[in-house]
Image 1 (cartoon, rainbow, N blue to C red):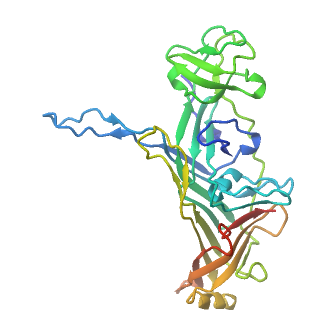
Image 2: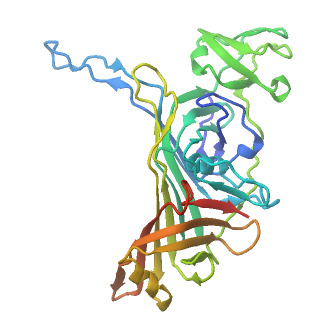
Length: 386
């Protein structure tokens, strides 16, 4: 009997897809330490509900079963080696905003009205269990929550396809170099899905791995053929780089919030910025079995800021009545290179600023509002790491 696995053994990778819903190799830089990750396949069971003369339930029908939902949360973190280096979770930022990063002096990404980046997300637990989703799209929100000295990023959405390798898939018999059909032990062929990049124990084709082209019962067809022979008994494993997330977590202290583009900093207690992407995964077309792409719909950028009632906030409170625009500029983390990031919303409309009070707590103001187009399309939010 094998030893049960524990969640502490999990490792997660995330990358922007080169082609929609197409498996690809991960790089070491795609490693990401997460707080949580959930992948939930759609329930494809359709109740029969047919009149049969009995109260007993009949077997369900198989509906669409390719996609599902996913969500992730992680601490915002910077790779402090040099400015312009992608931060932790860069794939999720690109998946939400859509823009192509500018890395010349800092890692900066903006919104796009024409590009919808989709993701490949993988998680490995223990030695051999591995789950990978492709065509993962942030159809929900990406949210930055700064409070209690932490900076937590959450994202969620839908995916187009899912593939799994289960523990205990092993090579059956001797196979010579150049072989493209690999037998596995009887009854184990269904434990692995076609399309995945794999290796056989340590045989990994010089680091490039092998793609499972198809599976017939207990025989895997791979591309390319074996670089080296197999003696039998080798475990079928996912091809993954060494997990290398060494990014430094951004502290939710010594931040700076400004209503005037960074000229004047005002004190705040907490802030949450939410980008609702408006992306739509095309997973409901009856002419296909899997999603065929992504549509770009209307997005929203919202912010909620809590502050103690201070004179410094008075003008913004008054302007909330008239929807006067401000240049909301938020530095998250201390003002130190490679230990901070910026959320710039150059035209921000505060729509509410209620005063909240109770006998036992300090008086606060709960600002809420939205970022709107400033001067050109897709310029309402820019994310920068420097």
